[in-house]
Image 1 (spheres, rainbow over the protein chains, first blue to last red):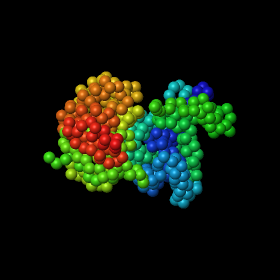
Image 2 (spheres, chains in turn cyan, brown):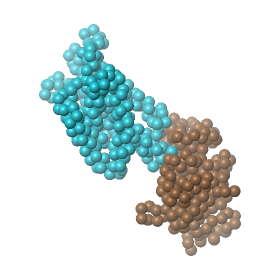
Image 3 (cartoon, rainbow over the protein chains, first blue to last red):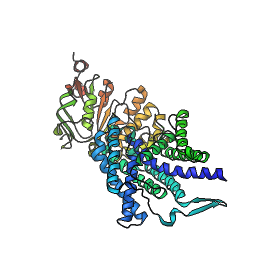
Image 4 (cartoon, each protein chain N blue to C red):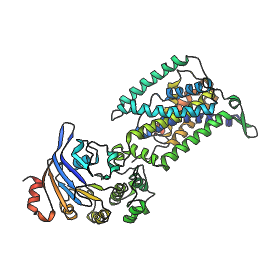
Length: 288
Length: 234
């Protein structure tokens, strides 16, 4: 069963990567904004959840909910006050600004929380497992991560394809000027999109923070995995991003199985392989 | 009757380039007015100014007495002025029905135009409502563009070159819907290069040349030569 174990492990790991990537995929799809601070914002969310559980003494779920609201507001304000000023035909200014934000957040976290590794405490949940079949049990935490990732994609898809906000998102992505003619306030749509992106990354932060320890410096590495998941899945497709995360997780698990030193390398190789075979990713969004 | 839409001394600029010079223009409730002129005469700029895509002096444009010259496009459509943009400009990521629905985004008025009313006027769109707009013919796409603008239940409907690139018979079909649109009280501004077509459908017309109004009046009061002179600047 060990080969099967590896696959299960890879798929579950993929759920975490997909959660990292969802927020990135979301705002790239709507506003063509590449947010280089995404990994650090996930970390910021993780530290905020940590503070809410320790300083305020809230249970983890309540803390997460509080931080979801906080990060949504933060995203909204960030877009209206900062990102909005640099979005335009030139893709360089937003890259520079989000790169700068990445450094500011990293150092801010270092200042506020120090360089020690931290972890979110989830009690018995961390170590409990469920038996899926005789001889096959999986950790409850990673399984929850995958299920959460699927639920998050399904929820975002529902918003995108079944609500008037979703229509406004897609219309603005197609043609912002014409969307305004429909009464869509582009500035608010973008701000809501960034808010939603950061709200989703709180889920990533909680799942990740339970699973592994974190310190202020690891944001950029999370960003890299998130990027790879988005690109593997195809730009602008949320289900594609989920698939991309799973491909990445699988490759890492299989690579690590062959030789523990190859784990990270295998993920990057899978990314390059997909790029060579399908340069637009596995499930690129339909565009005409 | 006071004008529904009142434009006075409108100058419009693209950066340093001045595209319109002192345009005066009026539109009454339920009226159909044609704006004709050669390429580059400023017709599209005028419509973009009205719709808020080009910003102007606040009181240069008044809709129902309210100064909207510098208002945002999104707020102007809520106030009751909708544009059918040149080249249709549908949203390819949205289905036919979603393209219509987004026309009503954020709007509070739901009569007389809703999905059912648009489908009654253009039954073919109902058959294709789940499909992609890119799969429609040019004429059908134009129907979606018009329907989308109507979904906001505008008092003023601006149509930018709706006959462009369409077969004459299709253009005929689309123009046949004009009385139905006007019967709901909506005033229509038609910008066309096809002068004869525009003048047949309009109560009044304005002729633009190099950003200025060179002639205006009722089509039946003006002879062909006068229009030609105003159009080409002979």
